[in-house]
Image (cartoon, rainbow, N blue to C red; front, top):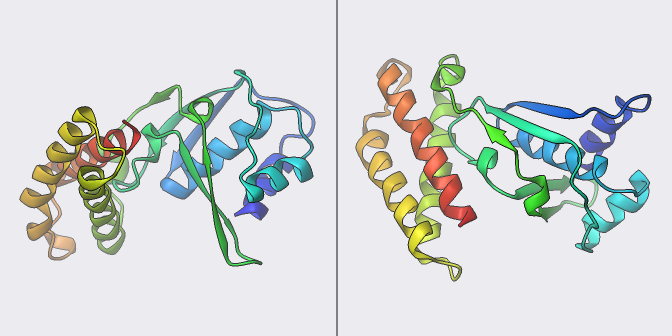
Amino acid sequence: TLKHIQLGIDLLPEWRPDLLIAFGGGSCLDLAKCIKAYLNCTLSFAEFAKKLTTNDPLCLARGVQSIALPTTSGTGSDVTPFASIWDNDNKTKFSLCSELIRFDASYVDPELTYSLPYEITLNSALDAFNQASESIWNRNWSINSSMYAKKAIRIGLSNLPLLSNENSITCKMRRELSLMSLYAGIAISE
């Protein structure tokens, strides 16, 4: 949310980091992208927030580097140039889109998902499968996006029917779901 972005930025008043490391699920990764965008522009937070909420283009520069360590297998946010922002007060969702907020590196380690509860595992896997499916019929379809989407869909079709309860989740399945999320994220970014 805008409030979370403000809280994150408020933690940095005395210093400007050279590197951001985003550790978490899609919301945490999107938050890091927004903080990176803020750090790579010359606006006050009020001006920055206004541009986000009115979809005015941000004038970003290269600066702060960022690394993603995703702990879920769903959004693909670790490889996309998009961030979703919620304004809960006005019940509105905004998107930030810029190649300059894309993570400079992403380390997809399925072991980071091993402690993820069943329901979050299932929901995030369904999210990745849905994103891959959308990449097939999207008006921005391309040969590359289709290739990655098909890879993600194949993995989903092999694994989602087996994902019936907490005990059904194996280490191999978590590796497959991480790969599905990565491919789906690449597909929506192509």
